[in-house]
Image 1 (spheres, rainbow, N blue to C red):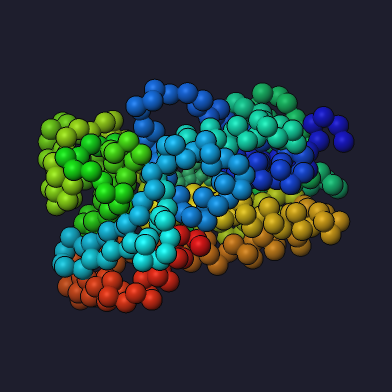
Image 2 (cartoon, rainbow, N blue to C red; image 1 turned 90 degrees about the vertical axis):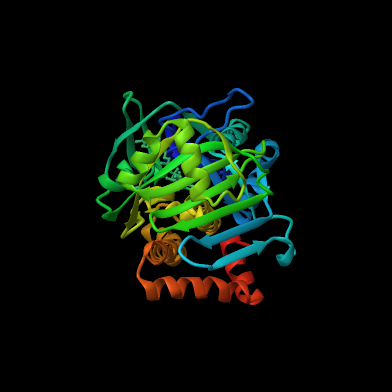
Length: 393
Ligand SMILES: Cc1cc2nc3c(=O)[nH]c(=O)nc-3n(C[C@H](O)[C@H](O)[C@H](O)COP(=O)(O)OP(=O)(O)OC[C@H]3O[C@@H](n4cnc5c(N)ncnc54)[C@H](O)[C@@H]3O)c2cc1C
């Protein structure tokens, strides 16, 4: 093998791409990670990244196994309760980790904190070459054992397997001709960091408004990260309010559960859509994370699905190598596709159903969801099943 030959070339340095590079490098594969942006290494202690993830217990287990968790833990906020309620009725549900015999339901963590921790793991792993900042430009059709990969800066690499971890607008997916079904939700998520009069009680809060869900996620420093999804015009109106008017509107929309909103930082909008690639593998090529599936953030599962992809793909590739099979063969990669298809598509459809059901003002549907929330809340076994699935235990 020459210097520019790799078992696996990964395009995209988001959390799934970084995790996959670390996981495969630790398993002994020769990996190149091509990342357009270099993850931040330093920031002012009191600042909070606007991109914040609810990380499931299953994802936490992967990050622990990779050795990234000790760097993450000081800035991770465990949430022990989750409270969800409907603005148009009396339906409510409460999940509590102690009822499940668990210390936490999950953690709220800044994206840049996870990225920096994974970068340190990768730096310590000789088998991984990090090319960053670097952008994958194009790649050749499979030629025998290889795909040729060209970077925008003129460098070229050879890969036995090319992995697209390059997000919603994946170049790898599009150039490979893998069709993705996409639909705009007509909503945008307003994201900001806020300080409230009362502490967050280590609880993830979500109120379903007719215009979309509003979440308050607890942060390690006592503040909350809010994700307020609303139809586009409303989201834009909310962003354009001055700080004082926005704080009042936010506290009202949240029924003052944490008292007044004392301060609000920068407000940023993310357009919301769903997307699903029909095929996620081809000869010497596979997709992970948002390149393969994009879902509504209402249950905070996007990155967690991407990390499940990482676990499944790493298992399939390791097994194939141990059995001396070609890691780029479609027959091998199909195992990965089959392992992930049901969960990815099922979660996407479930998020869609939640969005439709909770966005509806139609009386029978309102009744149904309120009754449903209360019914499940009163049924410990059903609650435990739902929560264990969401925690990925
Ligand atoms: C408002 C909001 C809240 C969310 N909250 C949560 C949550 O609480 N929990 C959760 O699990 N998920 C959440 N998500 C979903 C989550 O953000 C995504 O699922 C996740 O970012 C997907 O990671 P990814 O690496 O696949 O894609 P991305 O995050 O888009 O990363 C792709 C990376 O690839 C790089 N790249 C792109 N093209 C190239 C190229 N040609 N060459 C090299 N590099 C390239 C990009 O620079 C980028 O770094 C939320 C999403 C939104 C919009």
